[in-house]
Amino acid sequence: KAGVTQTPRYLIKTRGQQVTLSCSPISGHRSVSWYQQTPGQGLQFLFEYFSETQRNKGNFPGRFSGRQFSNSRSEMNVSTLELGDSALYLCASRVDYLTDTQYFGPGTRLTVL
Amino acid sequence: QKEVEQNSGPLSVPEGAIASLNCTYSDRVSQSFFWYRQYSGKSPELIMSIYSNGDKEDGRFTAQLNKASQYVSLLIRDSQPSDSATYLCAVKMILTGGGNKLTFGTGTQLKVEL
Image (spheres, rainbow over the protein chains, first blue to last red):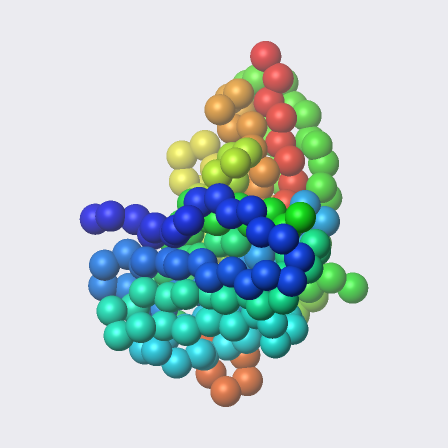
């Protein structure tokens, strides 16, 4: 089975721009979670989608948004980028939102200049 | 108080020694606990999960849980240089309205020296 895939792997943007990241879960997995990882804050939960609905949301500003499509693929959007948004963005998939085990994708490294 | 706390390290151990990684958590009702390993530049991978008080062994890894003390640890026996990585402790937290999320500690960097 193919693992979780994320595109693009690397991105460089400037302040004020917006960015869209994509995540394809493991086949059969219907839940996708997004995390932001920075050296200072570690892994922080952004949100989770299941069956095209946002199930849970972390403590991030409204500039961070997401969606999920009928094939379970998910996108995350960050608008009006700030320097502090530079981070590794990881998505993780699981069978559903009640299953414990999550599998992480390789991540998208976002650099905001 | 952080929800999940770990010493950032680095924790240095000689090859062949036992590495002991510790984690404390704040939510008393948490029931599920996980250890992830993350190599530099890579994504986290799950290595252990534990749900009941006591020890759980898997090869060279042993997870220990003490819910009364809100403490979970990971022991790595016969440490190898390939074990050098950051180890993340994660706690499953139940959310109002159903569902759950994983809350991670900031990780402990382990270095196994030859």
